[in-house]
Length: 351
Image (cartoon, rainbow, N blue to C red; front, side, top):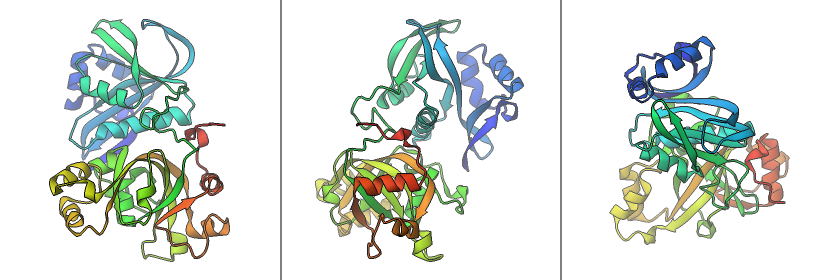
């Protein structure tokens, strides 16, 4: 079972075969690892049952003197070690989100990593989310390339700037049924849901999500619009208490099902990022009952889940509002952020 843990180095098995390639690339890796264990430092470890499948170590720094050109007097987050075993399930995106979330919450100015040129897949992954070549570093292991992201620099693109959210956009509540919500948003599960239902699959790991909807007005959605995800009631109690807002997402694009001339092209577009299996997707394509394919980024899990009663009591929605896709005002959106105790560092200040 896929399981991401924040674990002390002393509890991580250095002899796991996962680390063999790191030992090969970095001759000092075993000694470095043991020093981290002695200092009781921590790393993120992705386990697949008892096997290590991913590893991420982050370190705070205030200078990078050993690269060309050097950098001083900045608040820096170093991606010290980053590796995962590819399974075609977009695990890399899950780690990228973790890195960026930590940087924003802790107000780091820069993020950087050093990487060998041969790791072109990882280089492309980081470049997609705003990292740029910033120099080189000469080590006993050879030349490493430095890739960096300046968290204070906004380029105006929702992917390059991810997970920042532009507030000057249309905003909507989008209803999602519980069984689909849980699979799409692994960091936004309710506190009484078992983490074991989160599987190592593309639609859980991915920054990018696809939801197929019949919501009236979905055709109006455009790139950059904000979606506040509304998890509907699950039948285990009153919807006043079981329906909650859970996360904030940003629209990438919306397509009508008629855009896809063949079922194959439709499946190719949807399958990796949708919670629906191939059989369900094929049925949707044939029946055309849910004609809108909404692709969006998963930007922010709300710390406090506000239920329908709280939304009503605070005037965010009306008592007769049946939420499917409901446009909300700037004031309603601000109320949701305030009530949910959201970290507003994710919201770009465009005043």
